[in-house]
Length: 481
Image (tube, rainbow, N blue to C red; front, top):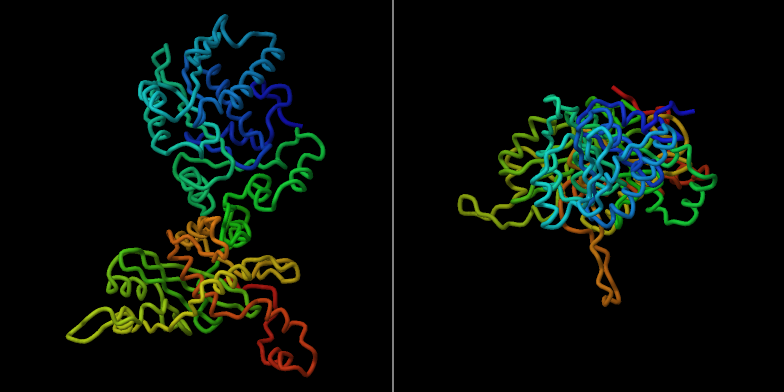
């Protein structure tokens, strides 16, 4: 049973709404799938901040004014009616709702302004505001520049001459963009920004939904929609090249586990690396190892713009390159399109000169996309190398690989024109340097389904004899050193 809180109406707050309500951070995001109580939490906090600080002034909005009027405003007014019924006292002053000016005056002198956040009229209105708080519903729809303008408007002084507690509050379904990069990704990586809090609210966290609601959504919608809007995955983007990627499954540490993926001591596991060199774009270097159960771990990255000499110095400072069995690179790096001391010269030659010895990667893009996808997919029969439980992917990424983890969810297919009768799938060529390096590295390993077939090899077969030569190290557990 939830605790009593007048501002959340008859049912009171859910546990996640309590967390959102009580957190002291100035900027808070209540984000997740449908039915998690996001809009209601936003409305409750707008009423709370207005009533706790008489004479306060706040703004509530959404990107489009009409969308706000048809959704959030209805929730706000319904919640006000509930509170009035419970308390037996009016909250809105007599004739206090001015629909033309889009203002609601409360009985204690506080005012809630509302409206859209897009268009020239909205820009002018925001620039003239002085407020003590703002609440933005479906904030991922809004331009970040508009949000920054709202932040600059938080300076309202109460009639007493004192300041209220200032807050910028957001609610949103999982979507890519500035909101995710500001709140979700830093939290996933264990390093949230100062004065920022992300509270994930899922449909399962809302005990007030009707029976069968969750089951109906899962039954009636495609898997990608369910992942985003029911399971609340911020990594589920439409048209993803690797739709099985999930931060809570493939990344360590994550929100539910503080386990690190450490660099392995030299000689314990087979190590290798992959590099995607950029001329004007960043260069990405990924370091991998494979355990005794053929799981791949990406344990660190280097990701910078600059000259080859700078890359070589930084890579050799960060990694012991002699520990890698091989370092794979895009075959285009072998092209003799440069000149040095009167002879043809390649990017490969430059790295070689610094004792970073590269091998040509298998650059079949379609095969590489598929191979990475195979390793990301959860195999119900595979033993998890960290938990020891059945059901696991075979590719794990350290949270240190910030650039790789930011690229994967946004790595999507190009849109195909309908007139093309024989379309070829191509990934969008944008911020994909770490994804290319990942593809090179994983493509150097056999298909996990070939490995799985070895697991059931009949006695006396070739694969059976291969198994006998493998290490006797117990399967299913990663050595965490």
